[in-house]
Image (cartoon, rainbow, N blue to C red; front, side, top):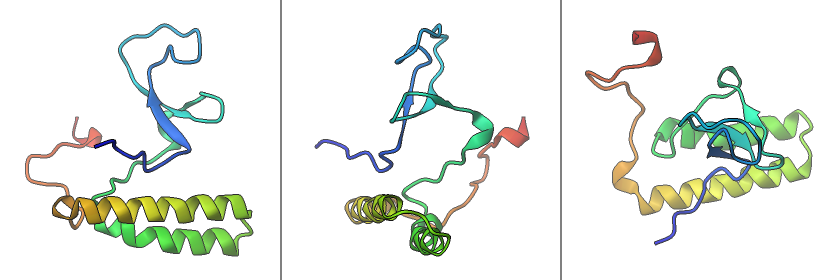
Length: 110
């Protein structure tokens, strides 16, 4: 079964992808449109299994529209909502209330 990419605007790639940077074994978040690197202080990550995130996306779409986002952005969010909901149907056993489990570390714990 081929996995569908849920967010089509970004991808995870190595530093040497589409650029001449040395590859130190790291992976970076990049923009699909030009391969540019998104710095760590410029993004947050939510997982498809997070039930609160799934409930938030339609509200995000409404806010985008109210702020005057163009139709291409709204269509992209609608498509992401569709992909996310499809993933959640196919992976219902993985979906859950967000948490930080016992023994789970975060970067602030280091």
